[in-house]
Length: 263
Image (cartoon, rainbow, N blue to C red; front, side, top):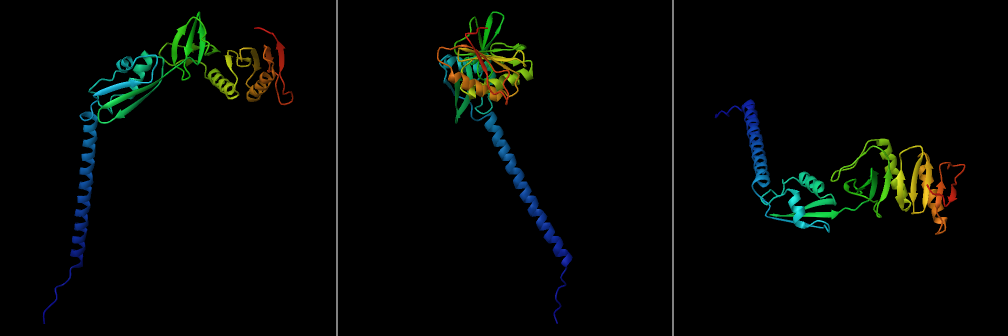
């Protein structure tokens, strides 16, 4: 009688584990090689491939396209992905302060378009005999001998300004109050002439080219501005003077008006 071979279960399990381990190593090796290929491709794209051959600029009515490209510091031959957007933006805005915003459009394989929008004075403040005109984004545009018609004045201390750089305020509390007041006045569609936050317990604003307004502290400031809007809307076209709202509260929700009062 023929004897059946003895089945070695331990040996079979070991071989199965070895096959599984070889398969796992093969998969790991494949994944590693694919990652290396992807990294190599990315490095080549960011270093050798996609050099810029054509640079254009659009959007400004103040500066020429040639001037924008020159001041950006971007050159033909730079990589279209790694030319340095932050550096280029800082170069442009520091040397051409009337640029408000900058975007870069890549048209592969080799064309870069610099799209800009021009800035305009949003507010100004006076130091000495000069007005510093500032864009809505807080960029100092220029100095002028007179207040521009299109910008309102801010009055506060501790301001540091240099043309071609962001404006800097030294007092965070004043800055927060200032920004809040501007937002509230704009939300209520009041034309701003000036905002005075030198004394934070005696806030003042000028609106509509006709009214000086005493707001007092920032307590109930939202309601005070709403009341101001109501009073301005009820005034006759020729009326001008002082509006007092510093005593406004929930029990006495009114303001007083002194006609033809001047500061």
